[in-house]
Length: 341
Image 1 (cartoon, helix red, strand yellow):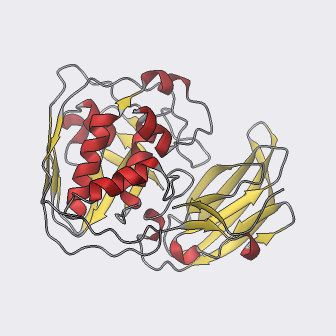
Image 2 (cartoon, rainbow, N blue to C red):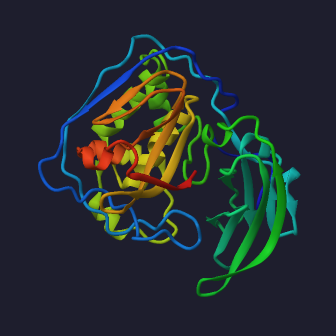
Image 3 (tube, helix red, strand yellow):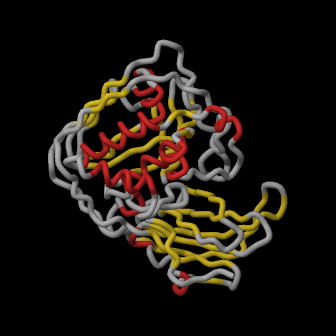
């Protein structure tokens, strides 16, 4: 039986960017061999609008990554932003629940009891995202990644092969507190809470980081030095795969989806807005996952790719851990964002 007594799904509230100026420099050794790197998923994204099911990724050659922290001292992280399912406030038909009570904080939650495979669909204008929803009543958190406006939310059961029929729906008029809200909290693809091992490690790194950029540097350095690309896992990943940041943290292995989820968990938990993005990377059109983080601190360098803040800045841990050269990092034009979580 589903218990609706304020079930916490993962994650802490409030975010305020620091005003400290800083610069982050990254030197990555280029791989000598031709790179068949991190082709995360199918050649094309799935029609559902969710991330492609990762399959057939290639192992990356190793490379040494060196980062120089900006300054010593503790980064003063804000309280961790929470994401919770509020069952008492959810709309329901008796077997399906949609909670829109936290729309201003950039997310909705849903739960369902069903004997069939279930999808949760988020529609806003031309954007449609379909997510797997547990059919055993376990609530899941979904980002309102289209910003302010009206969202159609639908719970849909599988009726035949790839066909789904609506069993319950709700309309949500969202007015976010700010644009960062969906990206400072846990969700179905970035699942963590205050007890997560990766969150505790990030808090440990923050104590020596100095500022936002220093923490990004420390998290980047830690993941690139601690997580290796798992080619065997990439070959066997099945439809509906969900990354688990703590599992990646503890095993030290993962595919690009795992890298991006872990980085997002570690940075979001310390108040740094971080997007998990699925899309394409040229010149080979690889379907891939990476991150973008936001800071009002200035500048960081990844091979030939440099960005100055305040802005969203690209962070590709898979390629960096694997030693990707400038043809993959480039000037940013070769990254095509498709889905943002």
